[in-house]
Image 1: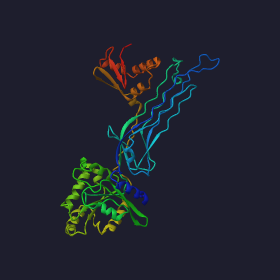
Image 2: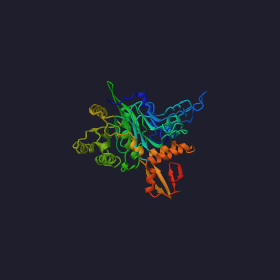
Image 3: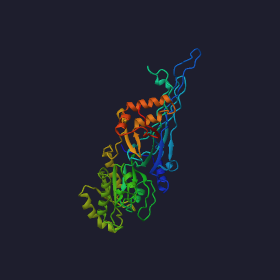
Image 4: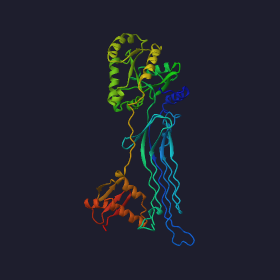
Length: 446
């Protein structure tokens, strides 16, 4: 099934893409899930019940930060003006076993085709393509437990509760990859924008110098009988693009989602570049960036056939490229020659290309098992022993160190996890400083 858009939507996108300051396709933002609400220390206070049991309720969960695909958006420009997004924290618990209310999720709308990456590690968190698709990018913290949750056979009157867990926080990159059926690729000034303007309602800015197109342009190619497809004119490549030279990665990122590529070459060699050699150079850049990208189906548009030099070069172009399996169409963006045949061939080819998109990056949601929660690591810096690990850092964040019972519970868990024993193996001595998260304390053995 081909991706289709109504013409008004494409024209709106075209208007946005045409402005040099309007089409924003990569941003960095900060996201933080809401903190969990605190659990409460409370005891029943009823008439004729002088020593009621504990009834402190749990805190509510903090809100998640969620990205959601909105097909009405076509650029990341809104993120240029707002960089920080924080979800609300959960409500605190209260007496009579009343739990705090969980906070609502913060929904951030993004255009289809948005890839989300962790700014620190570069890991892909989500690839948002489908309308309404969502991804949690910063989880809210769970609520702290109230003292009613800590009653046991040996502890009848717990006088402590947990603080809420801090929400997850990170910097992320949002990168937009165009969702188009077909991409026009080739060196700058080979005539891609002219071809797009001839076969669709798109009106990209066109001029006779390299790098005319600084931002992608989309257009709908209508062939009649409800046959249509989306065509993208993507900024031109230069040698070294796979390393980020010139428009480099920005170009290659937008090519990734297309199903088929129309490789436009300057058959008249107006820039002094041999058409066949130029074709090979572009494909080498694609291969160096991604083997999967280089294997995308390509058809060659030998452009500028209205010029004498192009006719002289055509035979060599066809002999060189069709023997390698590349179909060549002689065309002229200026006169429209050959474009109808090319577009009909492209539509037919699209209908038989399998629907799967093997070029999309595989997304594996990180799942923290109980085993990973128990992991901890000990290092030493400037005579300070530093303990790290997801589980132990969460324990520190949720412990009320102003409460004596809570501190004693913390010490018991430290011993149970084997952290104290491991510190002894590392050579810790009485009075040495231990740091966990943002808390420092002195070590004193029992």
